[in-house]
Image 1 (spheres, rainbow, N blue to C red):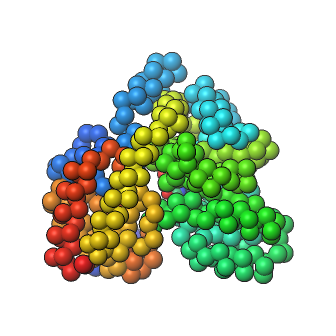
Image 2: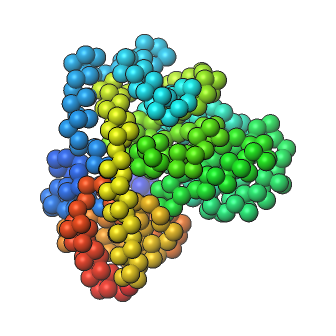
Length: 393
Ligand SMILES: *Cc1c(COP(=O)(O)O)cnc(C)c1O
């Protein structure tokens, strides 16, 4: 059996290799910043989700260190048993106040939040309407829930409305969408989605993973951008991207949070986050609240980068945010593009199926608030040169 098992493992990975789909880990040395040491090479980082540069911000580290002195390192148990530490409570209070909701519940990660929230709230009697490009954790949450799963073409409101018209027989109905799509960098039309939800008696859940901290006047996300904070029933987002920390939030009504505390299995059956991580997140929220200048730099960098790439002839799909895909289509070519850039000191990772649909392999470039014009221009020159060499433009 053991031999067969190993043969299975090597043949599966071999197949991925042949298709240009094999993935491997690269090794970082030192800090997560705009310049990183990766596999022994100094490169400019153009693919993290560390949009505001907070991941290596000394204020977050200091907040974590101060908390370790007060509360120690581990939380020792699940929050419901005896692991509900002061830092968790402080973060949840601050987050609810910031988002303007009754309450907030912390999860250990965005992935765990989505699978826990969705599978707790919905079952076979319910229908979930979900954008085709929603994050894998939303898809997994829906599958785990057993709810009827209706997918609509990406951001296609006619198709969503058509599905809403044709699927009325359910106990509960909910529309779930990413607010900024992680691999395409475009935004969900949340204003239209909440209107449709009203007409058809649906609730709405948004995943603000890539929007929290960077969109809206104070960084609350796409809900703030569209002014629909009060019309979204379940606001979920992660603290691992722009906030530079780890963990995830679910913000909503008191009833929602009480329900999730009792029913969300990925909240109940897991140990609370180390309190120092929550303390760092709390500091990140303070920085985000006053982060107008950071957001201004970030969006200026994004606009500049996207405009230049388009001028060169690259297809950036429908990007409107700091997430800027460069469409390559074929996986092997995308990997080649990324490798050659890496050797010129620019790191942009290749994204391949199954993360994105087949024949849409791409480089997923992200800018940070802290990138300078000189750094952007250096990256642009390399991208242009290699893009031409590989006949992508
Ligand atoms: C990254 C991401 C998640 C997962 O968040 P983690 O905190 O990294 O687990 C969930 N949803 C979306 C849209 C994401 O991009």
